Length: 337
Image (cartoon, rainbow, N blue to C red; front, side, top):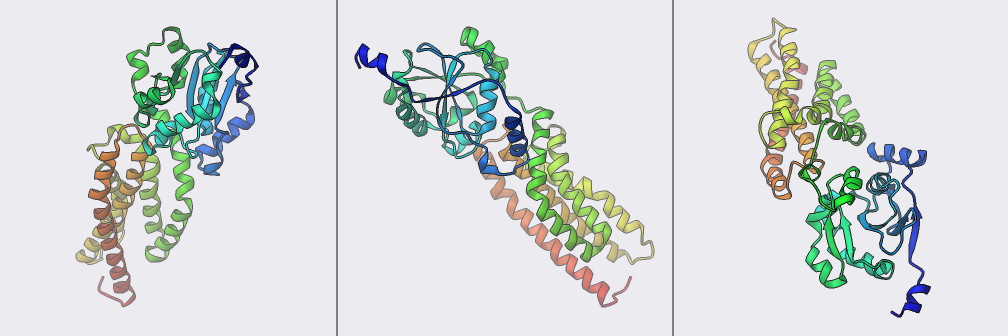
């Protein structure tokens, strides 16, 4: 391209700022609660943050609003370009695992936005958690742009830009209490309808105590588990869930046994066994869901857990349902107590 053509070239870009509005924050709240899951996106393409020139840095992110807004809000007073990829409505880390934050989409977006005609340099700054989806060598070969992986968190970018070197602390993946608490609202929303149905069925099958035990088993999986995750024994999330579920249901087992001191011993044993068959698998299954929300796991590890523990959960829960029906029939038919 000649110098005259370069001077007349109009870049294919949109304008954005680092300031978040109340609408942005409302969108974040809805996204955190899992409401309108696929509606939290911005249009893929090239964005100008502030007043960038041809030598300004280029950052790459997902079109999920939480990812896009985290990046631009961290770059206050920085003039830069943001290349937004179409990741099908999910964040950088999850999209890199699924391949949507990947080499093909990055190459396609570079070509579609004609970024090479917008900037003089050939460097792209990608988030570290997107590294598993992008082959930097292939991007360089096909587009001429060199991929540079920045820090894990967008908040560290201003410091990173001073030296273009990430410190060990910037590379460290953290998953603290605040990160885990953020995950709870969306799990509550996603399980609400199923929980309501389960509570009704449990009430008719075993009364108020059974409903409370059901509620406790579910809440142990979606609330207590993320809070207690680092301190629960065992390595696998499923085993952690079984342990937590067993501990959560134990008070209900003791209550069911002690409140009817005259009941025959084998009937009490059936009730206790039924509780341990039904509720820990529920907690363990919900705990297993968190393998997709944390940075503690790998795809191979999650796959192994699914094939190892899900059949066990299903068999135990199925046996618990059969035992529940047996206990119900014994009581209806006036069995011994």
